[in-house]
Length: 70
Image 1 (cartoon, rainbow, N blue to C red):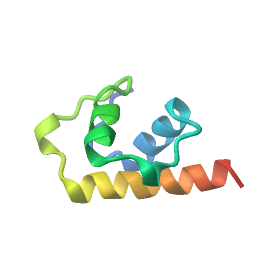
Image 2 (cartoon, rainbow, N blue to C red):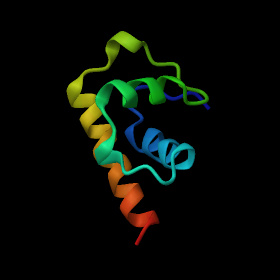
Image 3 (cartoon, rainbow, N blue to C red):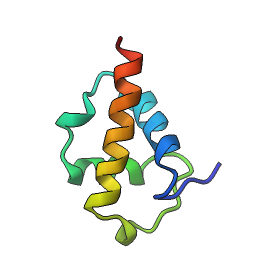
Image 4 (cartoon, rainbow, N blue to C red):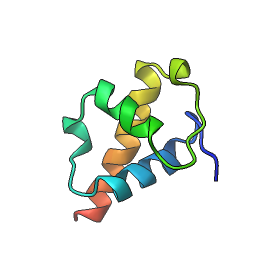
């Protein structure tokens, strides 16, 4: 399955699967960008991300993280 920057929920789910014990709010955007780029099936252009996109992904991942750890 191919995913791109606008697939926020799918990216969040995959980040949780790959980094289950990492609190998303502790991840720097530079690291988050790198982690997203390395997800299986990610085809997004690295230059198309921005702070707004990364923040939306981080918040979606945080919601998934809270659900998984409650």
